[in-house]
Amino acid sequence: MRLLNCYLAKYIETEIKKVTADHIEVLCAQIKPIFMFCFTWAVGGTTDLAGRKKFDQYLREKMTKFNVNFPADKLVYDYYFNLETSEWVSWFDTIP
Image (cartoon, rainbow, N blue to C red; front, side):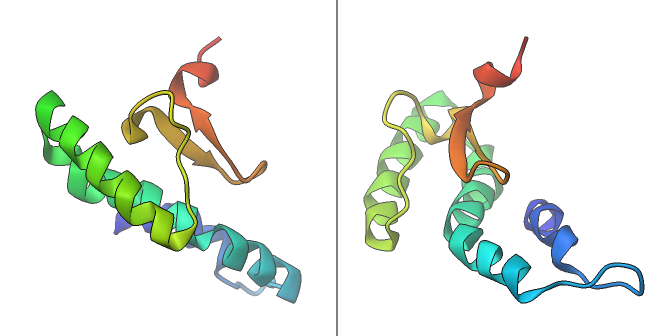
């Protein structure tokens, strides 16, 4: 739940920051992949390598119903959802 809160923190209004309809529109477009990323680590993060492979297969089957697709190259654990580009990015691409 805390991981999901990190993604949603910028949508909390304060006296200084207002959340606009445009912000909500972006969130609506990104909420499914954000949830799937958080679900991957909240539920599937507790498994070993064999369990991760099984969870990867299970999650990919379920995700097609929600029109969310991880890239097929690696396991779902190898990607994060980039909010700026609205794309799945390999963790390895973040290392210089």
